[in-house]
Amino acid sequence: MTKITDKKQESSVNIETPVLDALKKYADNPSVPLHIPGHARGEGVLPKFRDIVGERIISIDTTDEFSALGKLYPPDGPIAKAQELMAELFEAGRSFFLINGSTAGNLALALTVAKENKKIIIERNCHRSVISGITLTGANPVWVVPERLSEWGIWGAINPRDTEKLLDENPDTSAVWITNPTYEGVVSDIEKIAEICKKYDVMLIVDEAHGCLWKFSDKLPVPALECGADAVVHSLHKTGGSFSQSSVLHIAKNSRINAEEIETNLSMLQSTSPSYTLIASLDAARAYLSSEYGKQRIETAIKNSEAVREILTRTEGVSCLSENTDPTKLYVKVNGLSGKRLQGILEIEYNIEIEAATDEGILALSNIGNTSEELFYFCECLKIITRGNYSDITYLEKTRSMPFHIPEMACTPRTAYMAEKEKLSPQDSVGRVSAEIIAVCPPGIPVLVPGEIITEEHLPYLSKRRSIMVMK
Image (cartoon, rainbow, N blue to C red; front, side, top):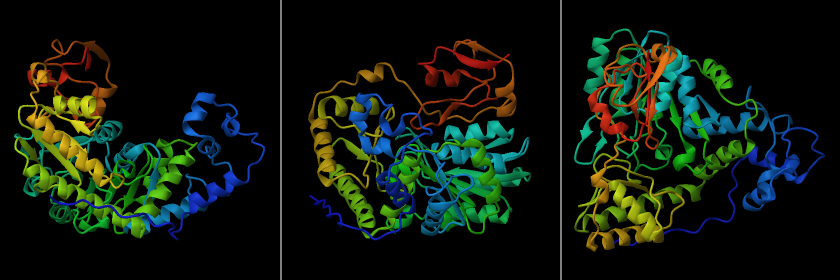
């Protein structure tokens, strides 16, 4: 049995943290707060809430009115410096902090590169925020379809030849937008796709939300910025250690995307009262990932996941997706149990919360914050479950959340979204045109997009919907 080891955290790391330093100075030198936010350092907060989150975090919930803290738009002071350090670490031309998740970055990218009635090649298994961006702009999506991993019930990698074929057929395409890795960790050949995009002189955007750790280990896939992408979105809150809802948008050094236009669009999309807690967490995550200890934790997460795979491959009745994947993503199947049933058993009987479940399997993550003991416990529980006598009641009522069909578009998403609408039951909506995005998060892959013709094939994915908005 492979031994999984963890290393001690170094006591101090001498790494620049401009936002954290400014925020600490602000908290350590309190003034009379005759300004927003109205809770005035916590006196206006429900005591129960204060007891749960602590007084310190409430005291640093402040606004950008103070020059010492800096502003997000336009960036100045410690925030501007922190963004420069982020760009330096990821070797980007510009890096922008996102306080509304990677969704804000995808929307800003769409507003910058996707123009009305112009074509954008988009991966079918994109996140719903990409479709939201296309809907805002009026662009016309052209779908590139990844491999279908039927045995696992998930989407696989994009074949670069399919991308090139679509570019041949659609010479008026302005950009290619790829999701890499997939939610379950499957990796596409972004370097080859980038070469193809360069050949056709089109921009390449990569939604690398789940791949922010890749730069820090040669055991992980090559990051898109190093492969030639023009822009990359990273959800640092997913795997990089920042707080939920905080992400980063990187513009490559030689990008064909206008960084100033990106900044303008972000200032329109994001709050004028940004959370300094979220911004500080991005500053901290960047410092952590660039530290020796942070890099050790990444290596440990990889070693832990490799050990888990070794254990599970020798466990009868268990399968773990391993080929062409991010090693820190553990997509697991147990014979005779659906993913949703397995998820329920792990949560109820073993107090284990996994990332997600499909009809076929579950997704667990080997994170930089997980211990070897936690992952070993996960393996032991799976062994016990395979020896148990569990019935799979969920197979009696499957609920699907990720479609495997290509949208048949009647019009652009924007046209459908802006049209007059009516509500119909899923059964009555067959043959009509969807006027909304329907996507279950996670993984956020759209079942229906605005402008798509609803078919009988959609109905299994809509079993929990009472109604659907369609065009009149």
